Image (cartoon, rainbow, N blue to C red):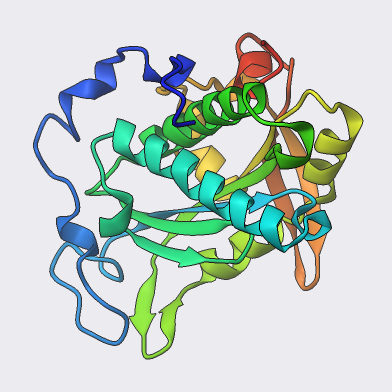
Length: 243
């Protein structure tokens, strides 16, 4: 990143016309925790939730941690910018080794969220890998969910926030990264997100690229859908296997 090299994710796509054919950007995410939200804000309409987590982040020394965080923010910022949004205008939570983002449906359609982050992070991580030494490489787990999120005095609350924190800990994601060191990204979507958004096949990432898994983490137990490298069509490219 920042090398001036082209990224596969920056190819022109039909999405470059803007959000739903309008100039809507970040109006629905201007509320602060503990303040009322507007008629189209978080807590009134459903929002997509995206959570990233860097694999093996604890193995880095302090300097490596700082470099990792800088690189993660740069990569995510590029993904968000590509769909016409500004990361600083979105509701985000820094998790130390990742970022959680809230994206109301009026800001970005859920299927575009999946396409943007699966394809964008894959391309960004692949490009990053080409220009850094192996100890600085970033490999990432990624999770998606959706639902109603509400602000409170301490931040945000809602079942999707709890659920996505469990999904990203799915053993299958860790296993996918451990099984092949060429894999840069392991992703999972909640069962609801898959059934209502991904399954209909309107995005670039096809439903056939996912396989059903069962996640059992802490008090959460339920079905989810993992994006599997090589499962069908473009999945190998999504996961950064194509160099």
